Length: 103
Ligand SMILES: [Zn+2]
Image (tube, rainbow, N blue to C red):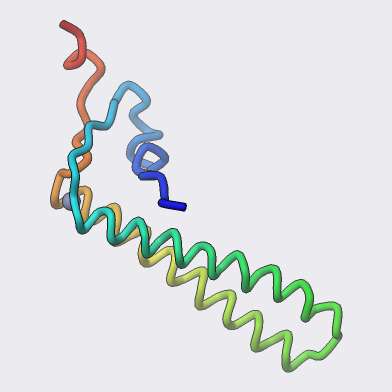
């Protein structure tokens, strides 16, 4: 499934509920969102696996799985940061005030 553009959920957007987002096609934005979709899927898988490993009571395996989860979580956060940076720099999801939509 293609990732939904989550910019409308960004902290900046939430701080400005009167803003709408206008987007145009952008290959880099699409690439980053696909990467984020894949990374979050991997993170979800690793967290589920961590739960299974926890039931084994094998501390070394649990610690390795925990570290993998942490790395996956940090990778997701890094991609999210790249997405916001890209949107801020490229302006391919322009924020416009509600008033600008009124005619
Ligand atoms: Zn862009």
